[in-house]
Length: 98
Image (tube, rainbow, N blue to C red; front, top):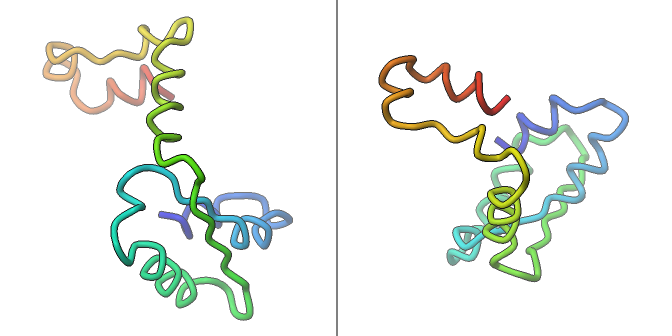
């Protein structure tokens, strides 16, 4: 997912993105997560590309971002209700959120 996201960005910024990967959220605190991600990215990164991974100082930053988004004006329009999902299918998520 990291590599896929970086390769979709403009070529002029990809090197900086590879060097500035930030881990955030509780799952990234699992033992060995950072080392494993680093090892896997080095295999798929372009040749001689430095991979830099930094842990977020606040393990709750992902949750905080989600809570701010949930409180923002108009976010309730993005809510997908069970009935809508069953009636329309997965495309309702794309219609409302993207």
